[in-house]
Length: 452
Image (cartoon, rainbow, N blue to C red; front, side):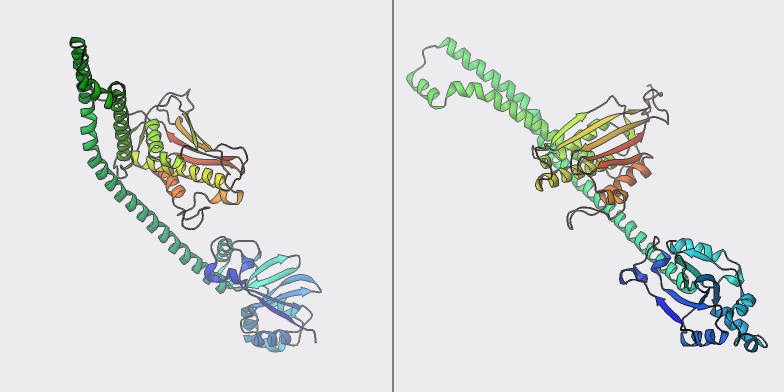
C-alpha cells in the first residue's frame, strides 16, 4: 500500500476571508494538497475521498511528474455508471483518468482572486464546477474548490461596497463640514468687517485732524513764542516734542493694522465660498496670497516662503474649492518641514517652501485646450517614503501619527482638481530632499463683458 499525502493548506491568520480584498492571491486561500500515483487503484481513491469529505479531488502524478487531476464529482459520476465499480476500483487510476478526463484549469498561485473568477466562469458549463489547479511551484500543484473561490469573491465584493460607502459618507461629511465652516467664516468675517471698515474709514480723518491740530499749535507757538512757565512745564511732562513725532507713526501703524485685518477678512471670505454653484474667474496669485495669509501663524517666522509668480491669466474655477486645495498642500508642506525640524533630520538646514506659477505650452493661443496654468508647491522637507507614494491620493491614507491626519486632504484635493476642474494633480518626491506637488488647470479666458 502506498502512503497517501493529504493536506489542506489553510490561509495564514492575517489573511482569513473577512480580511481579503481584491488584490489577494490564490495562494492566500484554502488549498487542498493530495497527490496520488497513476499506478494506484480506484479503491484507494474511493477510501481517500470517503475519509476526507471536503477534498474536491486529487492530483495525479507519474512518479514525481504532474499528469492531471481527478475531481470528486467526476469520480462519483464514473462510479454511478453501470459496471463503473467493477471496471475502475481494482484497476490503476491511469485507466479511470483516461475515461473521466476533462479540460483542466491551471492558474499560478500569484494570480488574483478576480482573475481566477473570470477564468473560471469562462469554462464550459460541464466544467464550471471542476476544481481549479493552483500551481505554487515546480511540480507543486494543489486544488482550489470553486465554491470557496466564489464565496470569497462575494465577500470581497461586499467588503469593497462597504468601504466605498464609508468613503462616500466620509467625503459627504467633509463636504458638509466645509460648507458649514464656510457659512460660519462668512458670517464672522462680515461681522468683523463692519467695525474694521469703520476704523479704516475714520483713520484718514483722524490723520487729517492730527495734522490740522499740529498746524494750529505751530501757529500758536509762532504768535506767542514766550510761553508761560506752566505751559512749558506741561509740555515737558507730556514729552510734547516726542508726542508730535510719534503720533503720526502711531496713526500710520494703526492704518497698516487695519489694512492687514481687511486683507485677512477678504482671504477668509474667499476661502468660505465652498458652495459656489458656478465657476468664476479666479486670480490664482490672489488666492495663493490669501491662503498664505491665513496660514501665516503656522509659518512662525521660521519657514521661508519664496514666490516665483509667472505671468498667468485668470482661470475659471470654484474659488472656495481651490482655496481648500492650496490650503491642504501648503499645510502638508508646513507639517513636513516642522516634522523635519523637530526630529533634526537635516543639519544646517533652513526650511523653505517655494510656490511657482506659469503657463504650460505658452506658445499656444490663450484659451487653447492644450494650454494650462501650472501651480507648483515645493518644500525641502524629508520627502514621502517610496512605499507610501502610490497611496498618497487614497482616501483615509496618511503618514501622519494617529490623531493628526485624517487621510482626506490629498484625496479631496485630487477630486477637486481632477473631477471638478478637469485638471491634473501630481507630485514628485525624493526622500531626504523634498516634495513638489504640481497642479495643472485648463486655461480659459473669462468671458468679455458685453458692451452697454
